[in-house]
Image (cartoon, rainbow, N blue to C red; front, side, top):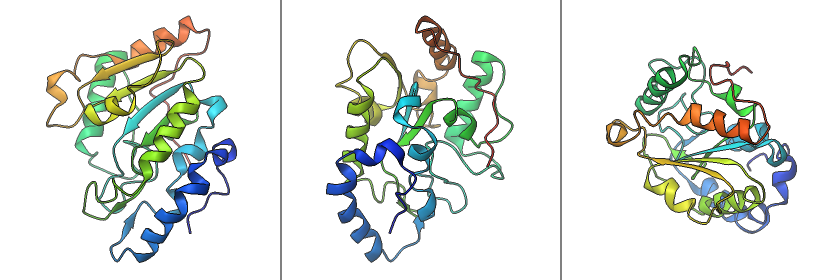
Length: 219
């Protein structure tokens, strides 16, 4: 069973009553190793509550390499080197945009400032990217976005999958839509898009503090 004891206000979403039991049944029958570890599956929601969320960055599914994924989109455990290539490209753009980046790939420092790093699937079989993407996790993402659309927020939608999920967001929000930072597409509009400084400029117009994008993660 997945640990939902630390979800706070997210626990009220219908997903946890209606859809999660079916996913848990499939996980119990899964013969392959599943990533991330069960205690980390909902780490993004645990770290960034709805009332604290100012920015949403949508990922796809957890890294399928054992030891990498720890429950936050694009983030990796602090000891991971070299960085996954998508995260390496994010840091390259970050340094170009604001002049600094965290020393490791652990992005929990962002999460604690109100950046929800949410994948569109929260589990993956080791070595099989997108192996659980059709298991029902999309219902959670849809409900999270619906809840968060009630107040102006910044939504970062990298790639077609994230952009499709964000179609229903209203005009009150900042929407940043570019190519995905994957090595296959980063040169097609991700590099040079300056998403981090654009977010901070928009947050300033909302009267809220900027994100310190270089802040380290931590335990």
